[in-house]
Length: 138
Image (tube, rainbow, N blue to C red; front, side, top):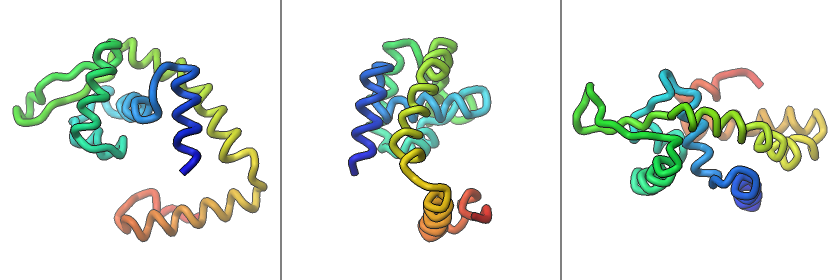
């Protein structure tokens, strides 16, 4: 419960974005053509459609994301990472990775990291047995 606020504080301080906004940018940066349907993006960012819509609106104002109707399905909207948004992810990622390492990885021994990996895989498998990541051996 304390990790999320710590990561949020680092991102706000160093990059001017919330952790949720960074998750949106990162998910788009890893998607084909840097584009996702808003419904898929909400799932990846672990937020509701209304929360996502509000956050994407802020990211649009910064010109890091734009929205267009989905040409394949007029009922859906696509979120697209702009070139400026890509630059924001590239600039933000190193500091965020450093903070995650400092808070989560560095305090643990190699044995503890192996245990945490095994535990996380079991929890993910219980949550979603079809999840591809939960099927990899620890």
